[in-house]
Image (cartoon, rainbow, N blue to C red; front, side, top):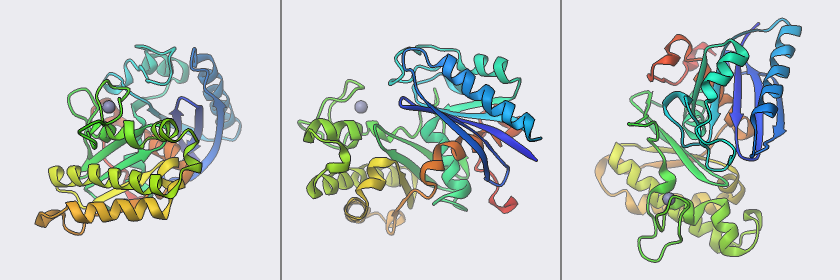
Length: 300
Ligand SMILES: [Zn+2]
């Protein structure tokens, strides 16, 4: 059996697994993130998964890694906002030396966008936005079948579109009224004094409206008619959130090419981060470049 090594690096947990070319997750393991110094835990986790692969005769072709930003292109250096011990950490070099594999690293929300297009709610689509509304808010955009990067690799970062222009909450980025400052799990907890899972109906609907507003701007700018929304806050808020977001999108998308734009819940559940990382790895020999396409669903 052939598989790729998929790794998701977040501020709460580190996860690694083996994923086949048709998206079957063969094995997965996770540990809590030591935000002061995550490398020893990550190295042990990855070493364990690779030892499992060897023991069970799985040939590992390449590695893909989704990691919180910001980072330099290709993960040469990563500085995730919520992993305080990593500032300019040479993640690509460390993982390449540890595994001996061809390693592809990208922003975790951009990785998820590839995963949703491969096996999730955007399967078969060539143009879409995928976003995550959880502790923070992130996103990735696939246009003409290719993942957008931008100058430093931050294209698609919808969390810092301004949705409350006057009197909005202060954002971690330094601006006011960003989507992340108003609609993220942390923002909701700050505003209500409770975890997002206990948020009242009006907060769920307001969060949906703000997400719909940001999505409408992106749809107009980039000629999109599909947005996939994943993440624990969005999926946990459920129907009231999605109905409010869709209503806002309907109200804002007036110009002809955006009419009928739809917002769908993410389709990968808690496997999204690993499948996104696997999609990066499946880029294979192209991984040193920046041309990242959605893996071919016809190979399923
Ligand atoms: Zn911001």
